[in-house]
Image (cartoon, rainbow, N blue to C red):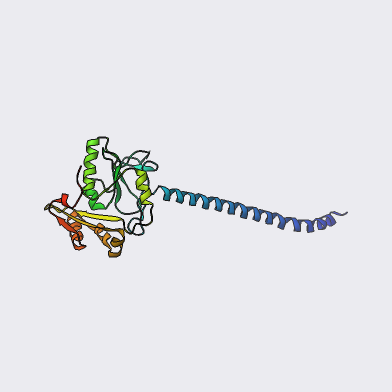
Length: 241
């Protein structure tokens, strides 16, 4: 057969093979993309589930940045020196932790056991002598740590028997009737205290107290929102050792 005839004979075969190759390649690419997407989605959902399982302090409006357990989560610690690099510390007790919200979650570890937990705004962080931008660690000096816990109680911090107990309560979605306390310490002495519930605070917008620029302003807003002034702070707060 002349060469020209062989070329014409093979052309229909190549016409069939070429589209078949492209079809196989397209199907393979589509399958691999679908598999990767499913794996990625599963991994994302798994991360989200684990995050929700570890996170602690959350609510529909006021507590939307959940606080993860310091016993399980790796956190970036820096001393505040701009020349220092961030160091990842795992399983160490942190005093402050930052999340999505403004302010920080603060913990205290008293000598009698358990822990105090409080989400503080910037004014309250200053009151506790805590840096507003850098993570603080638990003090190795238990006497100093007890003093820190006493200051937290001045702001209405709640005591929990364990991190797990706090996690269980924090993950309860029904917070409407849970107690909330706002405290202000005026320069002239005494204390302003406002006790309410999550539901009432949400309905009346009491969270605006957290927008105060300083403690005096915080006291003024607490008074405007119905807080009570106690000349002796022990009358309005549980400050017993």
